[in-house]
Image (spheres, one colour):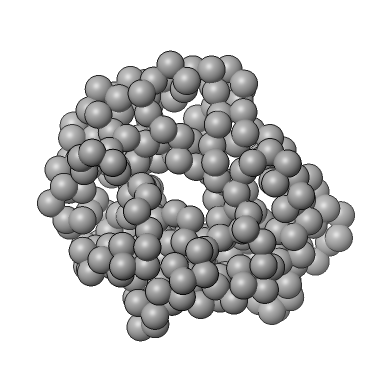
Length: 273
């Protein structure tokens, strides 16, 4: 990668008001190296047309977001989730994404232990389809505040345990600073993740103090308390040299001019990572 913006990736959800074409136009105009495509961004045109559109831009597709949500007390629902993830893999392949990010899910009607086992079972069930398409799978641990219904995988240690148990070259981990910055074992677990070649993706933003909405009030890098340069150094030392993916859910920023917001993203990325 020739310069720092070559290593910058922006998730389409970050600039949610833009269509996929608008996002591509503006990201490419700023010489941003990568884009991670959320499913909602391609729904209007479908995955095949979206894939053809993206091919016309000098920008790399980094990942497709998001699969997962495997656990349920209902076996039929678990099978439905597996089928849905296979469809998501098809869509990822259509937009030439090398990676499908998994928000793994949880069911409050059962224990976290049961949900974690169903997550592993679900991932193992879709590996053959992922391999056939050439699309890898990234387990993304989420902050414990989401353990009730959004994800039973809440630490990098848990994600490492699962990836090591699955033992597939097609399964790794997405490290998102928003979800993991608080963990006292983070440096150790990042190193472990890298040593096992499981570090597939690195997502950045910041944790605002106070946070007004636990889902849609993420901060721009440098706007909160996450030690981004320190974590970035650990990730680099673990052997990761891929994209730094800006993933910001923010009602505040979605309500602003997105061109101005994108320039702020670039400035924050250059200054704080």
